[in-house]
Image (cartoon, rainbow, N blue to C red; front, side):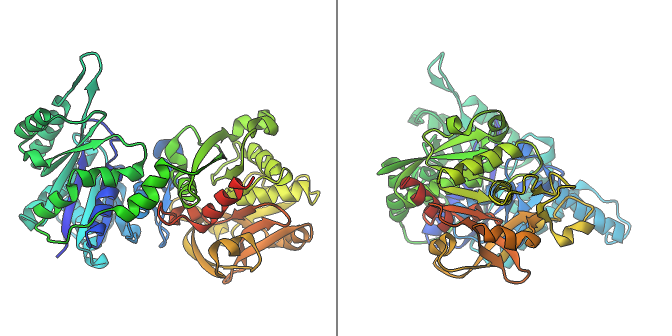
Length: 532
């Protein structure tokens, strides 16, 4: 029978519950346990696929095509767990399921209510993950902040689960804040006390408190928190700010969090350290031998979470090359008005990520033209690959009005066009080409050199594709088709012959990159940039 760790948060949002949950997963895996993680989001959207990046950040995609919360990216980067659509549930998904059952008559005329019907549905989803993925421990993160009205059904569901399972089968870790007030030079425990008080009013007594703090927690403060929050002193864990999220597992290990969790869950495993992680990841982050400047040209750069997996994958590429990656964020809209030479001064590599809509597109094309003509290592992902095709068609093949039909439906040269199956699509949610698809790579290409194999699988999220009607004219001028989906002959990877390193891929390689195992394309992109 799987055991459960429920992670909740209080005081303020953005305390790092996702990083805490991922770090706990890392610690437990190191101790020899098989873990999985599940994110419960209280919003009414069925999934984040139709949400604006400024509202929600990036949409993370799993192999089975689920559009999920970005925290699943943290879980996968820190652990070896494999996630599916079942690892992210939302209030929208829960209510949709319950209402569908009610319309079908499954409830036999009963009045459908939050308790027990909604809470039972939530519990069913949580148990399903444990049952189907056959794990020792399920880490369940509850989104939002304790006290939010929309989170209440999820909190009630985990309260019931803890009661049903009994002692040693489920614990609650509550992430809270110890603010440091500079004017009086003190760390205040009252917000934590109030947060725990709210949680206890709901019927949940936390087993462990993970206290986010700028300053070390003094022993007297630990004792005060323990007394007023009804936990053991050893259960007050310091979660100090770290320079890198990849230092968090080590920091929590020093606080003996893994040992404490195993004790409370009555699990016995051998003690193990994080030496391999610390030697390869943490030491290289702290003391890199090299340094490289990479420009990311996007339209959502004001919000760090909009390109979260991209930024992390670049850092992973740096770790693999023992290099610090300085990410220079450039707004593609501003680039439309400015000069590329000035914007990219000192840049050693250029990346154009995915996105939707026409805003800032010409700025991205200007960046790609600069990288191609100046022989600067270039990496285009999804939309970045499509725009690299547009740029090549315009400035090398002489098709001055070449475009994607996403931006100009009447373009004379639609080098990028809508996928055939998308023509009949009328709804937005979960209707793109989503999830993992195979790709066959050509030998003697940058892509093959990176992967070192001909057949790969990568995750997708797009509606538009390379138009095969233009394949011959583009390749005759030096564009190289280095990767193709073998089932439907869809172009997946393009390169430019004779360039230092120029790769555009239709898929999203950032979703399969880890700090201790950088994605091959990101690794080689950084390696090429270091040689610039």
